[in-house]
Length: 169
Image (cartoon, rainbow, N blue to C red; front, side):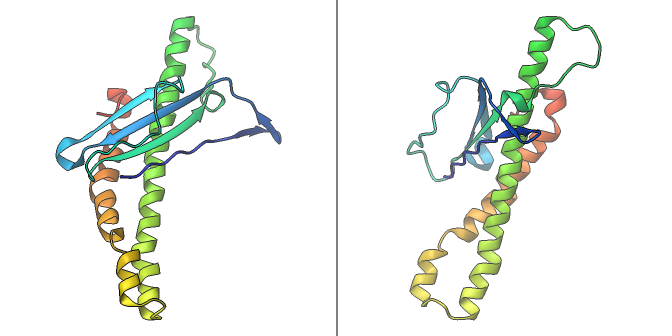
C-alpha cells in the first residue's frame, strides 16, 4: 500500500499566489481483477489521508491542485455562469487526475532506480551483508513489477480516455 500527497505552489512574476480552495483526488486500487476507483472533491473534509488495513494489493495516492492552477479563461465566447463553473470543475478534476498519473510515473521510476541500479551497486561493492540486503530490498522488485505492469498502465489508459468519459473508471 502506498500513499502520496503533493501540494503545488503557484508563483506569478515571483509572487506566491494564494488559493481560496484546493482540490483533492483519492485513488483506491484493488488489484488487476478489482480495478480502481477515483474520488474527486474540493472540500478537505471529504477525503481522508488515513490508511486503512486493507489487503496488500490496495494502493492509495493523494494529490492537491489549487484553484489558481485551473483558472482557464474562455475564448471570448459567451458562456453562462453554470457552464463556466462546470468547465472549471472539469478542469480541476482533469488536473487532479493528471497529477495522479504523473506522480505514479515518478514513483515507478524511483522504484526502478532502487531495484536495478542501487541494489546492483550495493551487491557489486558488497556494501552490506546478505541478510541486510534481503531485509532492505525485500519488496522493491515486487512493488516495481506491480506498479509498472498493472497500476501505471491502467491509470495511463484511463487518462487517455478522460476527454470522452470525463472520469477514471
